[in-house]
Image (tube, rainbow, N blue to C red; front, top):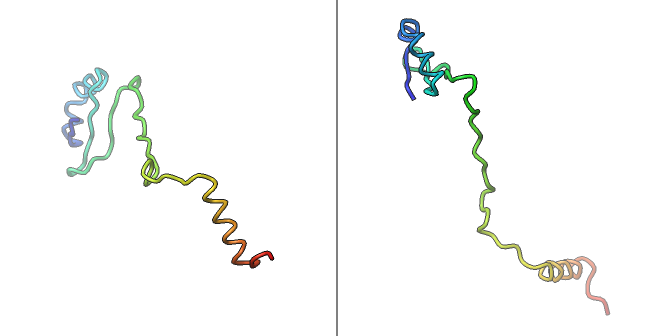
Length: 83
């Protein structure tokens, strides 16, 4: 993507707008720092990347039977063994 400074954008505005309308967006910068992005009105909006959770697909959750055993163990710790 082309970056132009404000002075250059002023002097070549017609040419830059024609390029943007043809599908070539550009950035206007001041002192090398990007300020705005110029794109055609009918240009498709950029979609955000979909982020997947931190360890997605790397952790396997055990079957429910394991959880039940853990629940019984915790219950025994709080309430003691039934006799």
